Image (cartoon, rainbow over all chains, first blue to last red; front, top):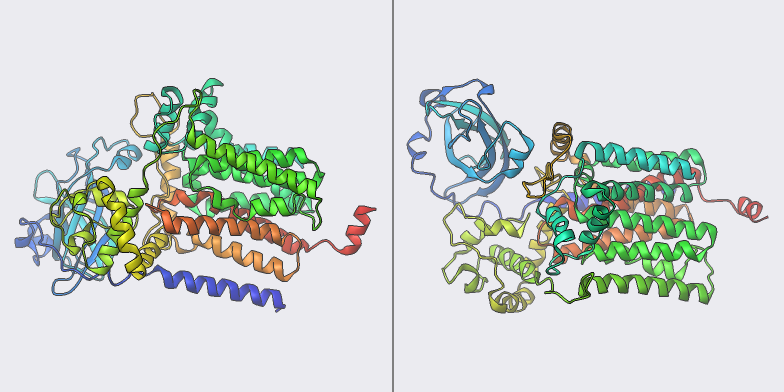
Length: 165
Length: 448
C-alpha cells in the first residue's frame, strides 16, 4: 500500500474513532434521575399481560410511530420516557391513551396523546388533527419497548411501533 | 464545459424542485416571504432572504422562483467548480455526479434542499463564489473575482454566522487571487478591496433596511443561547443556575431542569414539562440571563463544554437513534395561499429522507471526516489544488466551530452550507487523486 493511502486510512480511522467516542450521552444527562410517577390510570395495569387487559385490533386500525427515547431514568426507579404519534383510523382521532409493553407482552407503562404535531398533519392527508403527538413513561430501561394506542372503544389496542432502549 | 454545467444544474434543479414545488416552508420561510411585501420590522433574521423573495415576486415567479434559483445556483456552482478544477472532462462530469449523489447518500442534504431555508441560499451563494473565483483564476480576469466577492458578500449577508465558511477562503483569495504562488500587489489590493466592500455591504444590510435605509430593532436573541447554556450547565452540575426571572419566581429543581433540557433545541425547554416542573419562560429577565451566564460559565467550563459537545453531536447527526429535523415535509398553514403543488410526491421524498437519515453510514458527520481525509491525501500527493481544498474544508470546520459556541439548536439545516462545501471537496478530490497533479512537462507545454 503506498504511503499516501496508508496515511489516508489512518486519518479516516482516527476521525471515525473520535466521532464515535463523542456520540455517547454523558452520565449527567442520562439514567441519573428516578422515573417520575406513572399516570394514575396506568399504575393498576402495570405487570398485567396485554391480552388480559385489552383486545388486539388489526395493525390497519391505526397509524403512527414510536419515534424517540426522550429520557432514560436510573437510580432506585429506572425507566424511560418515550414519544411518538398515533391516529385511530376508524375513530378519526388520536388515541387518547397509550400503552407501553415489553417483549414479554406485559404492560410496562403508559401515557397520553395531545402534543401538537403539525408535521404529521402536513405529511399524512388522512390525519386532520394536530394533537397526534404522544408521550409515555415506562418502567422498562433496556431491551425493546412497544407502544399501543387505545382505540375509541377503550377495549381494543393497536400497535404504534417499537423502539430499542 | 459550459453547456454540460448548465444542463447538469438544470437537471438537478428539476429533480430537487419538482417534488417540493414551490418549496417546503416552515415558520422561518413564511415569515421571510411575508416581509417581502410587508417590509422589514426587525433584524431578528437578516433581511436578505426577504429581499430575494421580493425580487422573485416582482419577476412574477412567487416563492418558486427563489426555490429554483437557489437550487440552480447550488448545482451550477458545484458543476462549474468541477469543470474548472478537473482537467479531464470525464472526471469533471463524474465529480458533478458524485456531488449530486451526496444529496441522495446523505439524506438530510436532500431534505434541507427541499425547503425555503436560508441555509440553502447561504450554501448556493457560497458555491457560486467559489466557482467564480476559479473562473477568475483560469481566465486571469478581475471581473469574475469581483463577482465572486459579491456572491461571498450575499452569502454572508443571509446569516449572522455565515462568515466562518469563508474564514480561510477570503484570506486565500487575497493572498493568491488567481490561485498561483505569485501575485502582484495591485491584484492583491484589488481582491482585498472587493472582499471588504462585499462583506461591508453584508454588514450594512443588517444595520439599515431597504428601501428607506431606516434602522430597526436589532436581533436581540443572544439570551436564548445563554439560557440554553445555563440549562445545560445546571443539568450537568446538578445545581440551579437559572435566574428566578426565567421561571417567573417559582422554584425549580436540577432534576426538573434535566427534564426540560434537550440538547436538540432550546425551544423544547419552553414546552410544558412532563414532570410538572414550572414553565421556563422565553425571557432575558431584564439582563439577568446575561449576567448569570457571565458569572456561571467561567466557573463551570467543563460542564459548559460537555453541554456544547452533546449539542454538536446532535448537530452532526451523530446521536444514537436519529438525525434531528432533517426535513420539514410540507408548507405550514398560511394566509398567503401557499401550498405544495405535488403533495403526494413531496410526502414520498420526505419519507425517504426520514427513513434513511438515521442510517449510520449516511450521517452528515461523515462528510467532514471524508473531506478532511481528502485534503490529507491531496497534500501527500503534493497536489497544488490542496490549498483550495483545505480552504473549503477549513471553512466547513470553522462553521462547525462557531455553531459549537453559539448554536441554540441542532437542526440539520444549520450545517447545510458546510455540508455542501465538504461534498464538493470529496467529489473533486476523488477525481484530482485519480488524475494526479499536472506534471512539469505538461505545464511547460501548456505555457508554450
